[in-house]
Length: 262
Picture 1 (tube, rainbow, N blue to C red):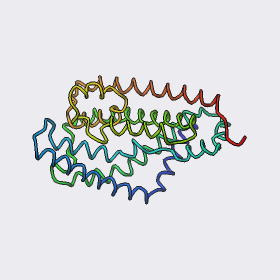
Picture 2 (cartoon, rainbow, N blue to C red):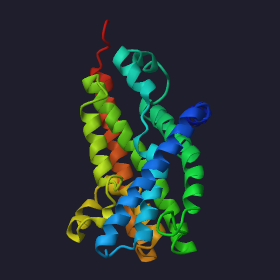
Picture 3 (cartoon, rainbow, N blue to C red):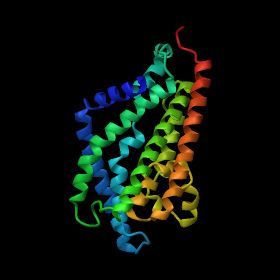
Picture 4 (tube, helix red, strand yellow):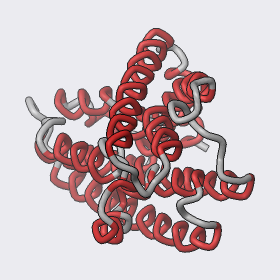
């Protein structure tokens, strides 16, 4: 199948960037330690409802999968700006599925290459500084499908960002705004568990909270096993909705696309 071939080829391409991987590991380790230190200082002043061990685990899992959240296909945006995407339009494939497979491979391999060594080192840190074991084997088993659904959701969000780039011919602007929303509402900037309860009831329904916040809460036990089916349903709803929206936007852009210079 052509899309599986594209996925495999992109996986192999990501393996070439070992220098970037090493740099990313050290960068995210640094930010992880700084963030945990800040939260420990906050906890030293006042006892919080969420244990510091859970917050540290939340931070490390967010940092470990940072590339999954914010990696972009720069080759595609360059093609859009230069007009070379017109060659891709001649391919006998569905362009949305073609680039969805590329983005999925990029985010998956880039995340795994960084997450495995990072989480290994985070497990070696003292209690309250590093990552904790899952609340239970069942909690870990339930967080895996949630992570997969979150991964599919973030790939769909990336394709929507690319669709806006096709309209504006500039990867900044709306893409930067969407990334800012993702940082805030996914829990990457501040764990959603520290938001007021009334806010969490709304924020956790948005697609951004389905990416990593939902799987992490199953991992730490803040979501009990009985919540798993509800979480999967919300995630699946957003996966289907975002993919549908992305397909509509890509098809509309294809009909109205103007290549600069010709």
